Image 1 (cartoon, rainbow over the protein chains, first blue to last red):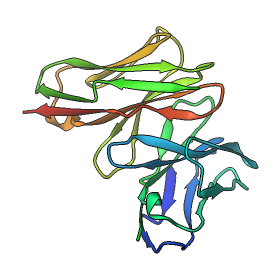
Image 2 (image 1 turned 45 degrees about the vertical axis):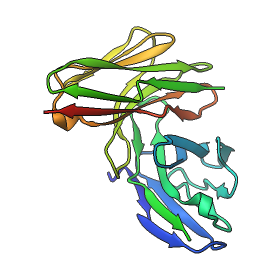
Image 3 (image 1 turned 120 degrees about the vertical axis):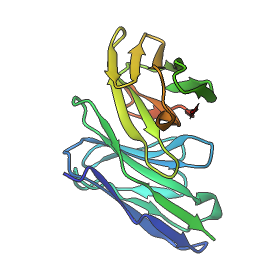
Image 4 (image 1 turned 30 degrees about the vertical axis):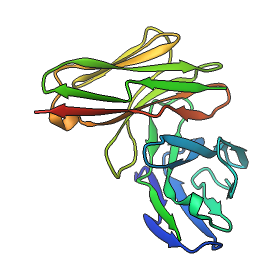
Length: 112
Length: 109
């Protein structure tokens, strides 16, 4: 039981490049979330999903896309990276009735 | 719109000096209120989930309580290793998990 696994841990992108941040959980959780955390700014919700095939926008979705084809995986896609997307990205998952909400260790992304 | 406000933004305590952190929230149809601890450079670590007003949870020196408008994280006789940022979040009927900005706790020996 690995919990929530995020890859990669670090990445440097050039402006205009694209990449996918991976998030996988092995706890059979329905709810999954993507956040970005800027220094001193707290966690801002990018996208979330309540189950396979269902996704919805959060507070700051522009420049990002997601998909949820399986319960386990919730990848975040960055298209045309911009310096404003430099941040630490966290994925989280929750089961609707079992106490506990779990985060991955984060992906530190720098766009130059 | 679901909202979470945490206070104070920062708190300095001496070792052994008990205190409380506040989390005020507005949410439509509370499904759960969550407390996390976050250390620098790491992901948030789950502490507690509270589901309804009057509920309390305890873990070592930490105790979380919940009313219809706010939650408190009580820290009893803190130690330097309790230094961290403590985050509060709510999940409501929208299914979103909304966070406050956190309280940075420093415990001096």
